[in-house]
Length: 333
Image (cartoon, rainbow, N blue to C red):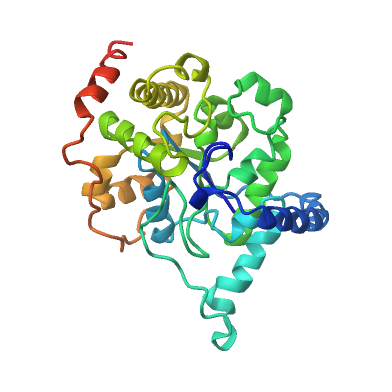
């Protein structure tokens, strides 16, 4: 099941969709939806906050989600849970049944173990319990298939927020933990999301823009075969950026997303947001853990994760000067 950001067209063979799997998942989820609706008839009130990781693609959001998943503080969309995108509460119960050590009777399902590798390829992780981007779930609540950019007003009029909130609350009730997920599809809609969730924490991931842009260009080549191909969601500025050269285009993409997230968070209460600088996080992830537990009122939790991560792509970049020049045009905005 693909979890890439962009459209299917133009993907290299290793990132192409498995159409047989897509058809099977659609059939399974349609069947489970009947039972899921019975659960939603008596919705739970959210006892835990939703944690939404925001920021540009290739900024470190996948590493942060992998790290967050391994802290044990939160529930999160796994590669297994993502397959139940239309019935996630049932999916959450099935995940517990199959993977929770409490229910592993005489090691019958011992091969389902927590994934601890911090590896991914263009946001795609490997392993039953590795974090998934959960785009199929989020897109269920958007009125037009394939469209990436929405105004807050459009979402207010078209999104089924009652079902969305009920399903997130239902999953948290199953797992008895906050639920953390990437919210990159809604980088431009933070005030709207802030308005629909009683309890939420937005985590903004910021990365050095030069290395962020360089990583975007690499991801384009890897997934689409060319730096010139647009990668990730088509943001509101897509029409302005689409005909620029690849470096200028990627620089504009990263800049505009960072700007949108920062502006959106200006309208969010201090207790409902946290800014994490990627390079600082890699150097000392425990600091992020301490900040996170404070925001979540979960002080006293013991950090047992890695002491640091290698900062990727911090060596000399071949296009560094050109990227810096492209980004310089946005200074002073």
